[in-house]
Length: 86
Image (tube, rainbow, N blue to C red; front, side, top):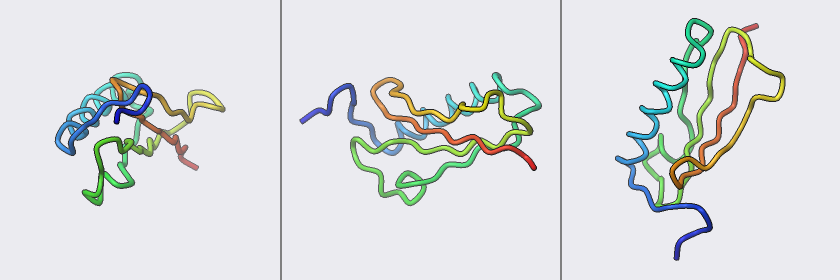
């Protein structure tokens, strides 16, 4: 059974998507980017076929007030929470 808009991904395939997203974050935020952390089932190696990717993006300053997001990229749900330096 395939969920609406989602595709099956292996742990290795998720790892590749995370690397691609990390590159895009570095390009988008430049020196504003401090670090990217991965959390959830992927980190524990408990991710299943339709598991999402959960990221925490540490930045000096948030680009916008409501920038936290989730999206479906290439059939996988990606959630990102932005945390700003204090």
